[in-house]
Image 1 (tube, helix red, strand yellow):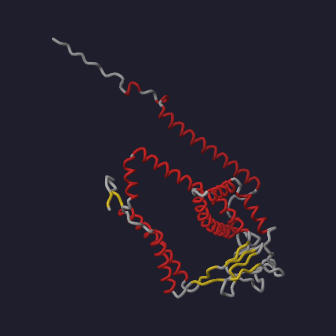
Image 2 (cartoon, rainbow, N blue to C red):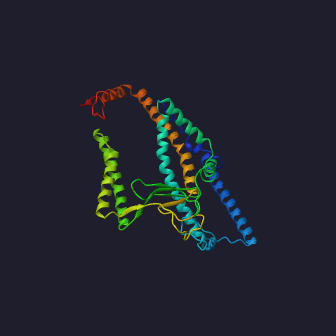
Image 3 (cartoon, rainbow, N blue to C red):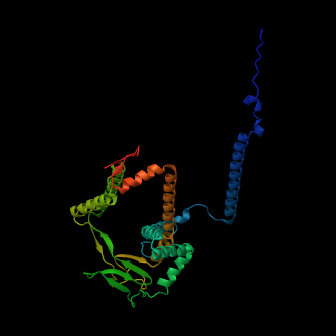
Length: 350
């Protein structure tokens, strides 16, 4: 009679699991908890030490100082010496936003053009673009701001702006108004003036911008689905301008031009800085905006170069993985076919 021998289960997880004080999972959790407790206790001690020292010296820790008068004025703004520090912060935020908006737009355009130049096969264009990038990227932004401030508006060739020494005035062709007023201390430019129904017009333009974005997405999806030319820029800009022109005519020209001009009197301004019409600003703003856009526009070509490298690397991987498919796609584009079969990619549709 055969005897059946069964082996008892050994080596179960319960028998091999280490105790909790040696379990790596438990140790990780305990270490994270200990780190959080140490950071919290350290910050609490530092905060208590700070408040204790401030109380001993009689320094208040509330925000009532924001309601105190600043004691000085800010040019090109309604801020006066009696205004509060809270209003001063708001003026600084608006000025920073204005400089940033102008700098971002110009830097994006300039940086894109320079980035395209770096990818060009033209030797002169490629080297000049590279020289621009390498020069401004290796100079601290503060040095650029100081240089333009002194070179253009302190010791530069621009005239002074005071009642005895008028600034340079650039006339607008075909009109009696000025296109720009240039001096060391102040600049004036042609600007858009809001008239009747201007608020409603800008609301319509905001809605038109949303419509332009929707049109852009629609043309993109149409191109991906059918292979037809998308013409996204043409359709989107056409929708934006079309709605804007119709709204402008229907509302009776709610916008107009404001020409910069030097005032005969200096009411509300010091004698050194007479009033300027149009859109006026002190020299510090264009100095800061110019320096920032030059420095940041040198960073955009680097992103374009990395993007180009990523595209080339992706194409190289496709060649190694699917050489026949890529050759077929290239043949389709060479024969002028509108699109290829997106799933099998085995034939072209004429």
